[in-house]
Amino acid sequence: MSKNIYIYPLSSRVENLGLFNPYIDDLINSFSSYFEFINKDKPSKSGIFDLLKYLRITDFIFFNWIEKLPGNRGGVVQTLFLFLLIPFIKLLRIKIIWTMHNKLSHTDDHLFLKKAIFKKMLKNADLILTHSSEGIRYAKEVVQGSESKVHYHPHPVKDRKSKMTLKAKYDILIWGTISPYKGIDKFLQYLHQKNLIQKFKVLIIGKSTSESYFKELTRYLSSNILIENKFIEDNDLQTLISESKIVLFTYSKSSILSSGVLMDSIGYGANIIGPEVGAFADLAKEDILDTYSNFDELISIIDKQLEDTAIKNRNNNMEQFIAENSWDRFAENVQKIIS
Image 1 (cartoon, rainbow, N blue to C red):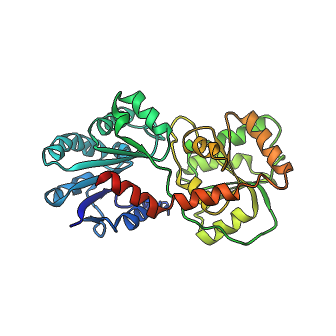
Image 2: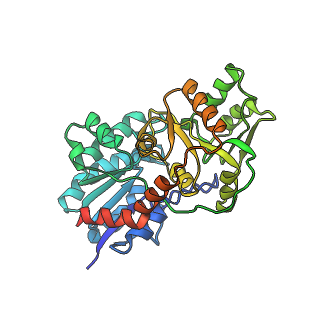
Image 3: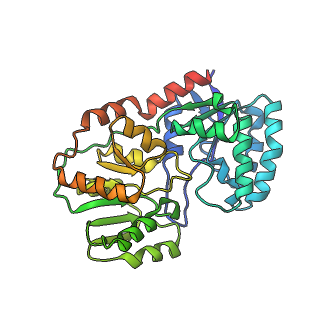
């Protein structure tokens, strides 16, 4: 008889921005061979309070991004309820699974409560998953001893490689949700200060989470710096990656552990450069991508890759990684731990 899992949050849809993170849907689809997701067809309208309807039939609660709860509508009240609920969950012998996607939070709002949730999860979760080996070290720093419950599994990836070869239009592609924590403004500011704003053909494309932040980026618009505020369909993304020599990540090191955009880029066979942190550092060790520690070093790496027409043949490493880290393989490995 399969065990029942309550998944939180059911969806990462942000309807007013037109954003969608497929992680939860992919997780449900891949784990459904082993578990029954009791709330998968019933999106919550009451946040964390929705759990009360399912406690009687729940074996596991699978939390994702729970540390962001204080920033949600009514988040402070929901957070206080969560703290009261956890001892009751433990009393009912319901197991808590938590995926630690990031180091705390990308934003500083409600930081005290976010830190409190983070520590609460590290202390009370029965199983903690992380998509970066750095997550294990970070857990130990925050709550000594919690690292024994943390299991590292690379973020699952889908094989989307195409045989299409298009003439390169861009030296650098930066894609995905446009948010301050991704550090795009700092990269453009650096190029401007160093008189390098015309050095590379750069396309920045994705739906922005903030009108003011997007407006700040548009200060750097030029014939070589193109910025588009729109959601990217999969077919368009495949073409954009094929037309770009490098996919660049400028994320802040302070909060990032793993990235779905990174894994999607790998799935499309992109040539990637990212900060020396989290999953980027893990993949650099496997010679799947290059990392940088500062923007001076980044420019040198970009120059080197643009001059190298072969751009390091990493196809074999990438294909092996994709084969070993599918969503089905992730579900299989995690269910063994749970069982």
